[in-house]
Length: 145
Image (cartoon, rainbow, N blue to C red):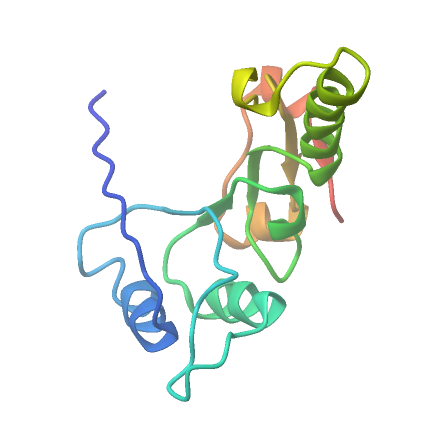
């Protein structure tokens, strides 16, 4: 099976909305959201992140998957293998420990990211798009609703 991925960096909310609404006609089968917290409205103000993901969920013609646990829900993304802010905080804590306790200079520390995530899904969103999880993923998954 061949998979093609196209990454789009979008900062303008109107552009975001246009991409989402026209995703199917543009040939996409799914949308994966990274961070959508810096989208700007026409007046230059930042669009509320909950407004952005809720609008995306409501208006998408195709399934939306998320990378962060806070992006998953019945009015948000379907889910996916997500990272939580808790895991990010633990990784940051390990860096702080190296600096304060082990006296390692920050410039000598290699950036780290959590090595694993968890499967998190919205049952409502799975049902909406008539999707079912493979058995091995379903038994590991947590659900928001």
